[in-house]
Amino acid sequence: MTKKIIYWAATGLLAAMMLFSAYAYFTNPEISEGFAKMGFKDFFRVELGIAKFIGAVILLIPAVPQKVREWTFAGFGITFISAFIAHLSNGDTLGGSIAPIIALALLIVSHVFYHKLYSKTSS
Picture 1 (cartoon, rainbow, N blue to C red):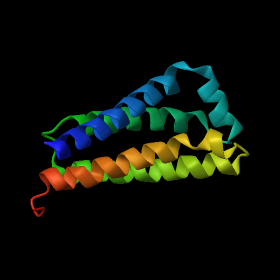
Picture 2 (picture 1 turned 90 degrees about the horizontal axis):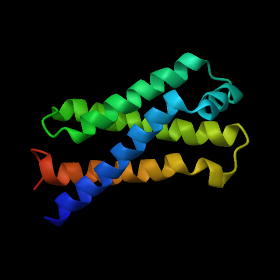
Picture 3 (picture 1 turned 135 degrees about the horizontal axis):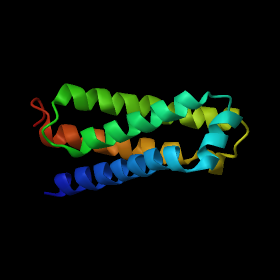
């Protein structure tokens, strides 16, 4: 029971962060300005917003096949590491760059406990 609570708490928090982020990508002009400041074209912001929304939904639906979920974990992991590097490379402080690392930590917890609960090979 504890494993299930840890899994759903981490996954729920991660999904909420991604849904909030996706919403902000489409509604907050400061996000658009931030992407432009980092040198990204606007389509990239839209692409990431859509991907974050889809990924969050995939993580919240238990019936999603394991391979799809694994690709979602991988995609989010790459996104979070890339976001951290992009923020630091563009002069943001460590404090201003830490949100992707927090998301990565939640992702790792979610992934580990997903396998403890649902993997066909786990004990």
